[in-house]
Length: 98
Image 1 (cartoon, rainbow, N blue to C red):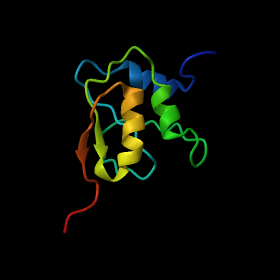
Image 2: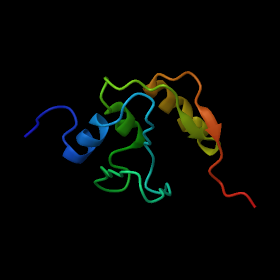
Image 3: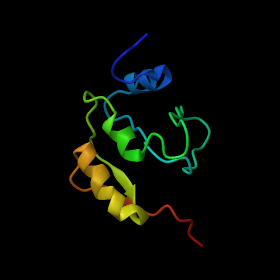
């Protein structure tokens, strides 16, 4: 049994698999995810862990090569970018067009 680092074995395993250039997504519970990608939900209850805690808890080993954030989250985006060490995330809109 682990006593340090990421204790959730599914999350630790999922983070150990990707290679260089493979994408990873950290999002809230409302993000629609198509079938296929591996999903590991570390949620304990609403807001726990927080988005910032989730980013901050990622291992130091993987390097963020870039980031994409919803335009609608501008205030949170700068804090998330700082946690990732990314100067300016690419912005996209999550709202459905129409």
